[in-house]
Structure formats: C-alpha cells, structure tokens
Image (cartoon, rainbow, N blue to C red; front, side):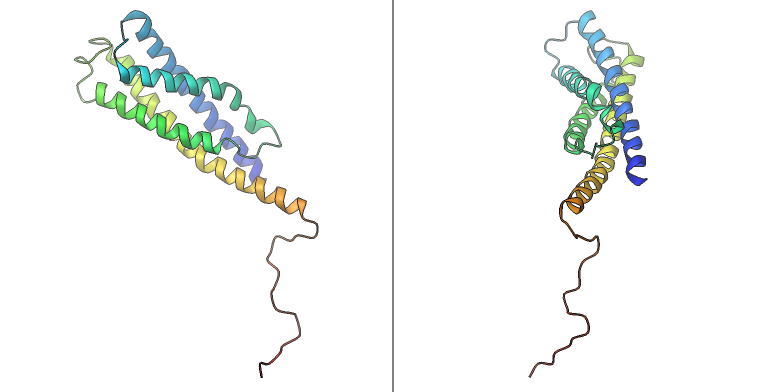
Length: 170
C-alpha cells in the first residue's frame, strides 16, 4: 500500500515538473523567436534545461503508473534539481527585485519574466521533493527484490547466538 501511495505521489511530482518545464519552454521560446538572444547565456541555459526536462519527463512521467516501477529516476531527479536551482538563480538575478524592466530579453514583459522565475522555482521544488519520494520507492523496490531472490531470507536479522546453549569461557 505504501509503494502505491509513493508511486502516485511520484506521478504528481512528475506531472508538476512536466507542466513547469512546458511553461518555461513556451515563454522562453517566445522570447527567442521575438527577440535576438544569441548572446544571453542565462536565457539559453534556462531554455536548454527546460527543453531537456520536457523531453525526458514526457516519457518518464508515466513510469510511476507502471506496477513494476521502483523509483529508478531518483538520480535524474537529483541531478535535474540542481540544474533547475541554477536556472532559478539565473532568472532571479536577471529579473527579480525591480530589474525586470531594465534587463533583456525585453525591456518590459515583466509578467512573463516573473512567470519564468516562479515556474523555475516550482520545477526545482518538485524535483527535490521527488528525489526523496523516488529514493524511498527505490529502497522499497530493492529490498523487495533482494528478499524474493534469497530463499528463506527473513526481513529481521537472525540471531548470532545459538538458542538455549550458553558456553562459559574457561
């Protein structure tokens, strides 16, 4: 029952990450089409991370719905959470705190820029949360798989002393 709940929570996190990357990709693609951003490395970085995440999570999003899934994307969640944290920092440096109207890609469009900042943070947050959820899923999957491979294996540790015999050292 716990594994099913964790898989549903993982699916919800995957979906939130996918939606966030879709929104960030859409807005930044609009900026690339409308304005010349060939030298704006922060925006290029954000677009690349959002596009990679969108491509991977389009397929990876449905994995938690499969019964045999055991949290195998936890390492991808961990790596991408750091990349999205960097993306959030870049967007906050460029467009937060009153710098929205004075920084490229446009000198304005503050609503779209702040939307990118917000969804960068949401993608980071859900990836970080999913790192823990998928880690628990992976541990349960691994423990269940190891327990079923070893015949006669028990969940509890066997005792090291023989029952009923005590020997005194001479």
